[in-house]
Length: 456
Image (tube, rainbow, N blue to C red; front, side, top):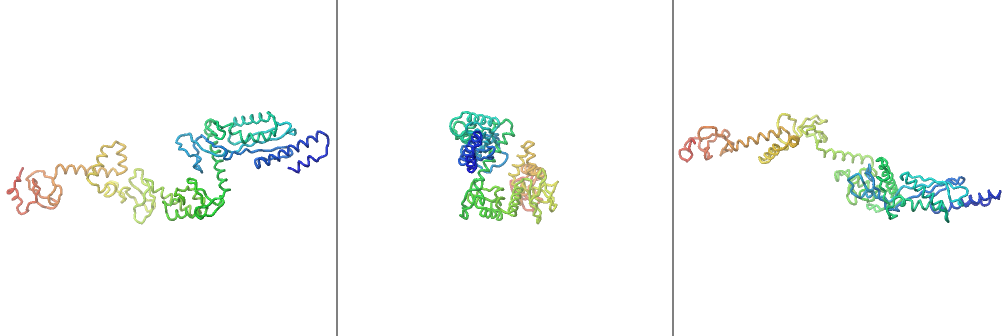
């Protein structure tokens, strides 16, 4: 640009008008060169002939920014963007950067004597009515005149004052963007939140990639492109060390095959695992994850047939039975034996209960309402519960109407006749009154020599 300016200044006079234009253009180009030096790659002159250019105002780590909007429709890559517990429809995000605003301009041939110039603003996230406010502010700034470059004033205003003008709550360094007040339509609100958080995450990723990082495992220093930063804990490792640690966790089955941070043992996200390990290791991780998930499901069980090995058999909706798709074994879900539709389980959740435990289940079933009974029938099986009820009825009858044989303890019921009893189990004679075993040779001698009456 310096060569162009010098050529314009050296051109021979071709009339006062053309000379004035050449000198004016040289002044313009000189100012453009000065602004390029001041603003760096934020400023560029796109056409020397038409005096077209662009200034991009960037807002990087300049403000503390609170964005109040709807929940994001994906997981955050940086958890500190949303540090608060949010349970409703309003979520507060904390950002450090905002997407840029571009000032497109075309200077006239009389600039800078005429401070006004054509311009328009481009921005992907500020609502159109707010852009109109900025347009009015920049137009007023140009019309106010004064000393100094009009274009430079507009660029400085856009960089330092425009965002606080729109969103400051008093302190120019603290911005509040309430998305619900900026847009009426839910889709527009969601779109703005997506734009702002996407930009924040992209800039953080870019900053990480261009930085140097020390790996705490191998103690070497790496470019960010060769490192991974774990999102939930923030620890940084080189790709090789992270891959080795994750692979060891997966292959050894440590933590149920779920990799953890080598520094703090916090769980690692699946996308972070996929980022550093090879395809075979990641497939092994997904398989372990699937098996663990299925094993935790109430309606998925392992086939009980010996030698089958199928770990994923889906039970029927009532949890009563299962059919293994691999070996076709039809089994009872409670006792894991061959399915027995019309008989109670001989093993399972209510087998080998003590009388007190069995009575507790029966009483709970009898006092439950329809939903409670249905749940217990799913849990224990209706046939099994009916068996318990019958057994409890038998125990109650035996306790009220029977006495135990003094030799083998079998319950004996006396319906009629004398007090001399013969146990049908051990075939011993005993006295119904005093429960003493009596001799079989002459069982009636007991009643002649004791206080026990033969009939009473």
